Amino acid sequence: MEYRMLGLTDLKVSVLCLGTMQFGWTADEALSLRVLDVAYEAGINFIDTADIYSRWADGNPGGVSERIVGKWLKESGIPREKIILATKVRGNMGGGSEDEGLSRTHIMKSVENSLRRLQTDFIDLYQAHWPDDKTPIEETLRAFDELVKQGKVRYVGASNYAAWQLMQALWTSDRERLARFDSLQPHYNLVHRAEFERELAAVCKAYKIGVIPYSPLAGGFLTGKYRRNLVPHSARVGGVRRYFKEKNWDLLNQMDGLAKEKDANLTQVALAWLLADPLITSPIIGANSPEQLKDSLGAVDFRLTLAEKELLDKKTVWEDIEEE
Image (cartoon, rainbow, N blue to C red):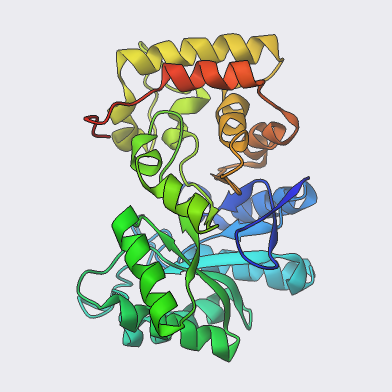
């Protein structure tokens, strides 16, 4: 599998990143461990998780995904330096309103808990899961900077930040000489483009920030799982209904044609569209089974021509007034 720089100085990551939000939710521990094995054997060295995964599931207290990843790291025998491990901080871990946010207190407590669950001495990429308007950005960045200097964290990144928030953070880091956000994890895919492309893309390009988009398959919509007259039961269907629009059904038909021509599937077409953009470092793919993962892995050797990418671009073009 190919590797790409993450917009950092020395992290070479696989072109696809394994997301673990489903671990402890739609994939139990045994299945999750199998997915991790298959991913690594296929060449994926970049794993993304978060402390709150998957606290929303019944009986899940949070931290379960990190614990599963940590168990795999410990039992697999894979040298730690072979894995690029990313996790996140911000969400409520069940300790009341004070047990969340990006304050120094919460960050310092949370990183120790994440390190323990992950069974590691350091985190390669520690990310602010989303902004915290109750905490000054300088306080957040000073805490991250301290963790970098301590060696507990190698790099820091942001997720779900607006362009102005990302610029505010970059400016503060530059002014105060603090560790900066070197990566961005935005919501970005063929049917959800405006949020990233409107302003964030330009910031990431100008400041050489690695881009690791989540939901590259739009919650399963871009796999063809959902059709005009077919809406199967799914844990994610509530979030996917936003894409049930005529133009998006037409898009799936167009993707069907491309996939058939190239002996591929819709998943691979959707991921190939992202990988055709040099700004994208590593889309985050999730899988509930090894079989599902293998569908996504096929995108590594699949390429769209310039004309094919432009065709998909036109099919999903957004307007300035559009709200996604």
